[in-house]
Length: 455
Image (cartoon, rainbow, N blue to C red; front, side, top):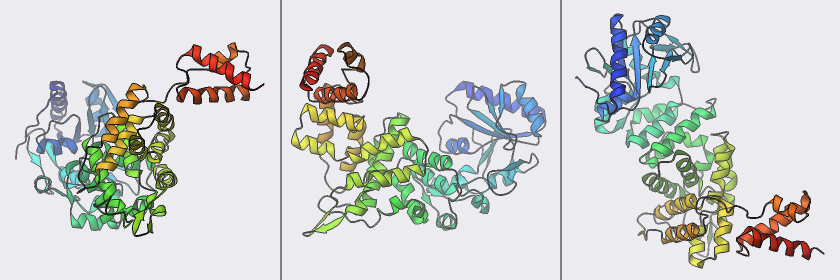
């Protein structure tokens, strides 16, 4: 089957043609491989290309590419070249040389064998740039057509990270993982995998998954929730059926994540923070859920969620800024509704902004929590729009209130740097949150009152 690839960017087509001409001149073969072929089969224009060259040694390929491109070799051990300024990677076929990611280039490998070393059938397809024919030895087109995610060969086990790739691919393309692939994944472990590799798959789940619930259900099916005990504890954790007719906390969390995914804003860092906060928002329920007077309650689950959120994220990333952004959203995820029901004051809203940093992010978490309860009828979460409107009017929707009074102002009043200055500044900031002053001049007058009250 011929499959001409559609390009939205003509410069990408032109660069590929130049690359193909160089390889063809040497009597070698060039193939498009991996995700760009999958996208072409799905009738989507690829935004980046992976080209695999067969029949040329590494050094000759590098010399050839340098004739027309600025080339960066990404480690000789991996035999991958990046073409600077272009979303194109050029590689040689390679085979593993032992445990771990080490590979050895093998220019003479057949395309069929090279594809067998890829993860899933949908990614184990190639397009021969000479003939434009699709090479599909493992039925990737069939599996895409029937909505199945299936491992390409028994070489799948060479990289256990592929289990998490199944998680995020299933969510992104709304695929069902084949039973034999689920069984194979049960035999694998993530022990020894670097956390940055784990994090990247979770990142893709949250940023790209159309239905994250599918990926997480697969983790449960293949037994990999054992590596994430904070999530595993949500399974079977009961909820009051009046408030949560959808089921236990695990089922609720999956619904919440699908709500989040449908409403991503397209800003990577914001979506990542909110996505992790939605995933973690009820991690405190397993230790707080009780049966009381015929009802199921989970009082205090918000603060109890802090420790499991930190432990879960700490195994995935060394980015303290990300963890520090997620934890306050978990802690405060019930406050939008509480403030709305109390028709809270400006002071309470300013303090919420101080505590969470981003009220706009908090509202997204609370909205996902509120809407993730089907078949409970939705009222559209009026608490969220109310709080956002109030926060915007106070100029605290997307950040903490900046202190009006600073140390340099107290220096003008004769206050020396030190603990006393910090105490006065803290008292002034609290007064600012209460609305006692809104300008530097008013703040200076308030500071004078604080200083006078000390004598």
